[in-house]
Image (cartoon, one colour):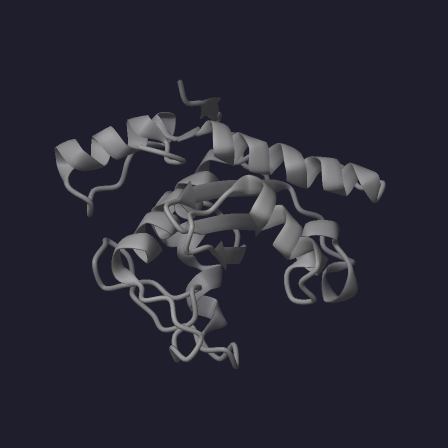
Length: 190
C-alpha cells in the first residue's frame, strides 16, 4: 500500500479500523520519512533546529490521513475543512470550520488518540493525484497559513516545536506539531 505504514495497515485490517494500534507498531513509510527530511532541510535553511519525530503525533497524522481519505469529501465549498474528523473511529468527531471556532477539536486529538500530553497543531494538503512529500513541502512553503508553522514565524515565532508527526495516505499529506517532547520511539517501515 503506497505511502502508508504497512504494519499499522495490517494491524487495522486484523483488528478493524476503529481499533488503535500500539505505539510500537507505528512507523514512517519512505515517503513520510522523505517529507520529514524535507521539512528539516527547510528548517535548517532558515537556521532553525530540527524537530524530533514523534510516534504519538505520527500515529495521529496517519490515523487522520486515513480517516480523511476514506470518509471526507474534499470540496472547497465544504463547510467542514480537512482538519475535521469523521464519526467512523474511536475519537470525537467534529467539523472544523474555516472561522476556527472548532479549533480545539483538532488541538486535543493527540491526547485523545495517542495519549500525547500536549496539544497538537496540524497542517494538511490534498492532491487528487495522490499526496507526495515534495508536493506537500512545496505547497506549504508558499502558503501564508502553513509556512509559519514550518519555520516558527508570525504568531508561531515564540513557539518551540519539540515533536512532529507525519502521515501520508492516498490524497492526503499531514504534519502534526507539538510543544511537548515525546520519548516514544519510531522506526522506518520496511
